[in-house]
Amino acid sequence: MVPFSPRASQAGESTACSRGGWFQSPPLLGHPSTEDSVPKEELSNSISTLLLRNLSDVFGENDADRRRAAIDEIFHEDAAFHDPNGGMFRGRDEIDRIAGVIKSTHPDFEYRPLFPPEESGDAGRVRWVSGPPGKPPAYAGTDFIVARNGRIASVYLFFDNLP
Image (cartoon, rainbow, N blue to C red; front, side):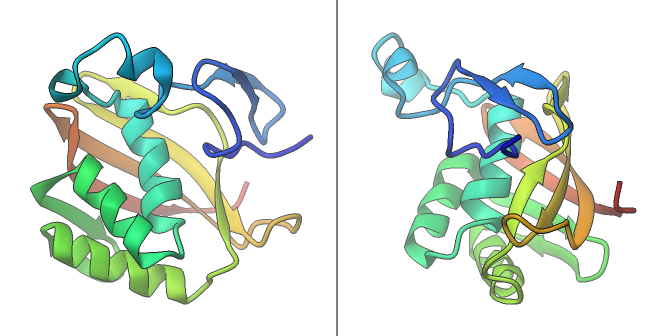
């Protein structure tokens, strides 16, 4: 079974989850089903979309320009990233800087959600593993976010035991 990758599926398709389950991927910005039906200024990211984009497009992205573009799209200007080992990083510039530092320590690692993201009100979480493609994961974690008006206001990172 192929592990889930947010980039590997189109919005609305069923996607394999690394635990063997299936879930419906959330609509993605830029996908015709969302862009054609809603004016661009009214587009809002679901909590699930924000969680998955944060994993793949921010902390999983090697290209600095693409990473920064994603940060500008999905984070509030005053957003905060809480790292249990590194403290708190506030603002898009700091989130961009720390995401680049973290990714540079393991440029070949990919984040793979273990389950579909969970949402509750304006917050959500996703449990994930990370490691080189095709190899056992090296570490695991949970991202918890609080969103405001379709963008991330806060991200809280928790490291978990490997499943």
